[in-house]
Image (tube, rainbow over all chains, first blue to last red; front, side):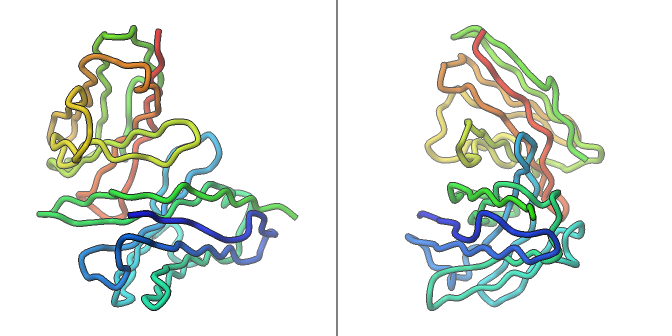
Length: 121
Length: 105
């Protein structure tokens, strides 16, 4: 299973950050997994942004919920993240990851390599 | 809220490393540990507090339940230098601890 993030590395303040994750080796249309986004500001810790299910059902971190939209495209085996009204605080490495639930365990078992997004004029 | 201690840990090769994670409220055994090496994505090591992910070396073990958890590296290898994060999945949103950096002494 491989995941690869893509999208602009530079976004202007107040604009919308848009990223896509392309998955190989697994199907985003499978009901067995959820597809997640996690971010990490430079030199800091990890923050779960949210996830999307093949049906389009989403679960967002309340701290970002008002600005986050996720979508899924089974035909391209991709899922996407949009984060609106960005500020410098949204500068981070953004990871996409596969989330699997097994007997109530929740595992982020495969991750993309991450993509750095900088918010700057 | 997840907290981790110490923030940094230096251990001699072959020695034991013990990392702690504390939850502000009980998360039962719904806790995972991730390893992150510089410039790399996190890697899942342990879930359900003590179950090793497939392919993870046996020197990594987890214990604890409720609010107190421990990750133990029984015999530190040079390739274990990394930041280790705990993460709870008892409640949404998923939350991570601030991490413990493990260095070779």
